[in-house]
Length: 237
Ligand SMILES: Nc1ncnc2c1ncn2[C@@H]1O[C@H](COP(=O)(O)OP(=O)(O)O)[C@@H](O)[C@H]1O
Ligand SMILES: [Mg+2]
Image (tube, rainbow, N blue to C red; front, side, top):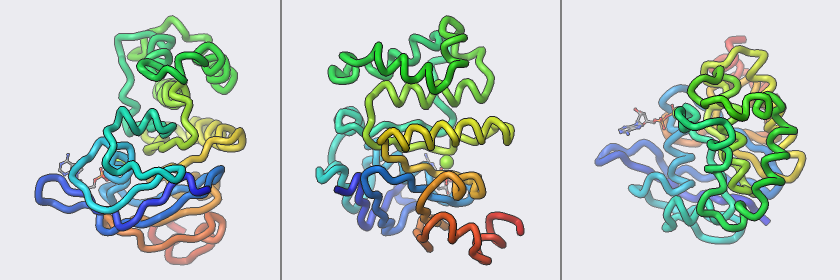
């Protein structure tokens, strides 16, 4: 089954259109990246899928169910997790409280919260060490781990991840991307949107290129790494 099928999605801020007939699909179990420059529309695309933007046209189907009319609250109940750009943590709450907030209002996630928390801590031992620390006092890398952990607490089958490398040193970016690969290998479908084209293409199986709100290319991630146009535009080779 397809985890996600987006067809002719357009999105608007007021009268300004920023996505133009975007179509792409993701098989269950895949790790797909959507790469694009700053302002290409990556965040808008993920927000449109997870119900945070309602001014849109087109269809979004997740695990065979049409979701484009659903609220964000219902979409998260359809097993779609979103790791937002900029992490959006509760800074005055502890690491543990931030994690627990992920399972709030989600009975299926709440039932398994202890188990999922243990899994998140096995993935990111740093979070366990800092369980009682306020999120606002964490380093950038730890915040990103926490944002991913909180999304995992919703028990997603599909995880949408927005620019996790933002502001991170290269070594930390690698740690975070490696964690995403592990999460994917354990059965969660991943859609990663990124400006960090090199690392994203290394982590993902397939890729789409978003330019000025339009999909202009799609291919195996490894073949895009060797694509002269991609190298010139995004990899500075
Ligand atoms: N809240 C907003 N109101 C108006 N325009 C916006 C808003 N958010 C983003 N945009 C515009 O939409 C376009 C796409 O932005 P965004 O989805 O954030 O791109 P990306 O995540 O790829 O950097 C940009 O031109 C941006 O200026
Ligand atoms: Mg963005």
